[in-house]
Amino acid sequence: MAIVFQFIIILFSLFFLMYFTFTCAHVIPKLPSSAVSPELQQRSISAQNGLYRTKFFTQILDHFNYNPQSYQTFQQRYLINDTYWGGAKKKAPIFVYMGNEGDIQWFAQNTGFMFEIAPYFNAILVFIEHRYYGKSIPFGGNDEVANKTSSTLGYMSSTQALADYATLIIDLKKNLSATDSPVVVFGGSYGGMLAAWFRMKYPHVAIGALASSAPILQFLDLVSPYTFTNIVTQDYKSESENCYKVIKGSWKEIDDTANTPGGIEQLQKSFRLCNNNISAGDLKNWLQTALMYTAMTDYPTPSNFVTPLPAYPVKKMCEAIDSKSSGNETFTKLYAAANIFYNYSGSVICFDISNDSGGWDWQSCTEMIMPLGGNNEESIFPAHKWELEETLSYCKQTYHIDPRPHWITTEFGGHDIGRVLKRYGSNIIFFNGLRDPWSGGGVLKNISKTLIAIVAKEGAHHVDLRFSTKEDPEWLKDVRKQEVKIITSWISQYYQDLLQG
Image: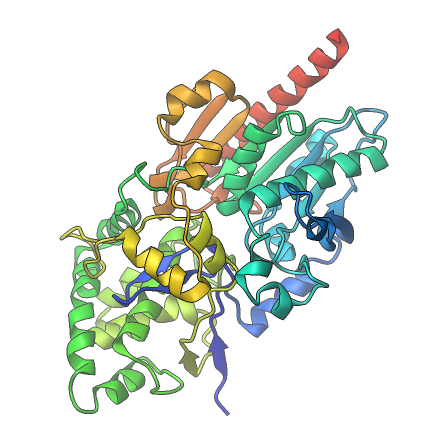
């Protein structure tokens, strides 16, 4: 019996997750979430033993209204590790991870940086799950009810999530008798965006934020919709001109094949798909997803963040395309490359290319309107001019709602961020790796002495937050040292201010 690899996208996972398709059949990536095989899920479950304890907090449904239904509650999951905490009497710090668009356990297991620095700071670690994801489901914990209509999904937003985090942190500090313990928040990808926004909106709760790979500028009228695909293009082109040309020329070949008699069956056979109930658009989306997420997770060491991958997976993909063993046929080369992402373990017999965009689909139809397209002639992807009208039409048809494309910049800012944030913001680290396609929407220059941009030329998506390894390059070690030094200065300044009253 064939072993079916189910590539399930939870989010943005980001991330994460990762896309919904418009009528043009062009894949729109979200921020990355877990897309794992059952084998990897089992491995992750066993890997988390001892990392944390699981707890739940009774959270209010709506923080911003006083209608009777606003007072409904749900159980919000959070994970805690107090192994190295110095205690409330010593006013030891509290490090909090701002949960992304997915299961919080998965993010905790991929944020080794916090576990590794906890002993140095004598910090307690808390990972809070985002509402509507994982086990933190309103309306009795019933996914079907919570996600049924816009009336129930309407309580899902970044502002509600941030209010959740503030409420939980304040209550936790009270219960720990740790009112004077400083809080530093962390996050990667969408979680990094939340971390930065949390510091801006709740400076009385958190003294600082590490916002890793946080594309807080990837919104309407802030950056070009084509920065993402341009960076993906450059990632592959920098490895091999031939690799780039093979991928760029493959999309027309897929369309041409699909339009011939028996073409779909030929594509199914060429790419080892589990069924032939697909279209050319489905296959292209599947391949583009692999290319995008490989670029995002182009880490210098082996990883299983999204799926098991070797070190420098973009390079490995291009090697597979350029290899003589892949032959001269485009589809054989593309299949070899896709295997790097979807089947590095070598255990998959056929691929199920169905997808589920999950809760992020709702978020990307309400406030998280992040323009992405690929109309540049040099783009590795098919030409696609991003149009707001396509998003509006899709969301109206799917959820019967009108997106608010300018709400995020109204709520959190973004226009002329250097001048504006400098006037009122402080204590935020923005890390970005330039091989990460999302870095085009990130903060890449220092704004002030305490609003610091750390940029790594060879860095990928929040690589700084990953567990360290002996194979880590020196530049990555230096990034983490910088981050520790900056966080140390925040905490030291906090204690000084506390003494001075």
